[in-house]
Amino acid sequence: MHDFRVHKFILSLASPVFKDMFAFPQPPDHNERPNTPIVDISEPPYALDMILRLVYPGVELPNIPDVSTLNTLFSTADKYNITSIYPVLRQSLKTFLPGDPFRVYIIACRFGFLKEAKQALRMSTPDEATTLRPADEKDLRHTSSTDIYRFMWFTRTRERSGRAKIRESILLNPDHDIDVCDEHWVDGQDFLSQVEGKLQNLFEENPCAQFGDLNGVLGKLPDPPLGCIPRVTEDWQIYCPLRPSFVRNRLILLASALNNINDTLIESAFEEEF
Image 1 (cartoon, rainbow, N blue to C red):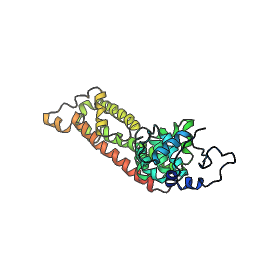
Image 2: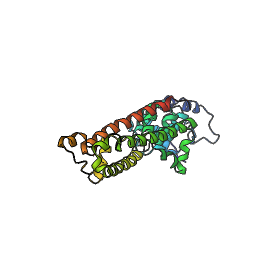
Image 3: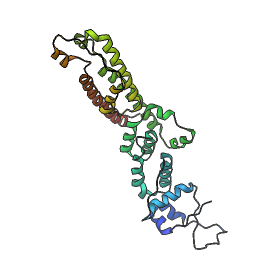
Image 4: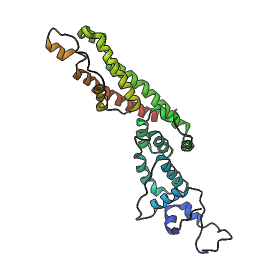
């Protein structure tokens, strides 16, 4: 059992629920401090300690170590209607991105934080919802089926769309590229297939990958084939689809396309009536 000796006035200002609880009849054996009301609560002591540090003026804010602790604080604040600490807790929610996006998402959805929910959804991957530990399942108790379905729909749809866009953007185009690269078509196709595979893996792990991330894939692969042997040197400079700058230009366009997929599907996910 843990006792917290606190000021009734401060708690009454912070929470109308606490204010009402102070008016409850005291237990018959309450004679050690007859003028000091006792309020029994079921929340874990660490959560109450943090809540008190958040509501007391001039006290250093507590360090919130993980999302599960933050979820407990949100639940406690919600139970006792301590709305004054919501801005601080909401700000803390952002600090767990991109490390724990799924749990940030379900907390943000529960408490109506649309901006944070969208940001967390963008950073999530499909596997995160299926790798919860048993101890984490309590975080889902207040999550609606709509929010879970939205999460699965978005991550799966983005994965399919992103894979298709990567393949479309990277592989050689038989209707065009073969005309300027027929000398090394097979070698070039093999090289770009390796690029595609690495990009697919990167996109799965980091669906918010930017051009710098995509470009980093090239440094992990062997040098590309020299490309076709042009009759005029300038032709190679302009047309060869295996030229490094040409590949990088494709990656710039791909990064923009993947970002557009994210933006479009995020808005659709929150506009759809599932």
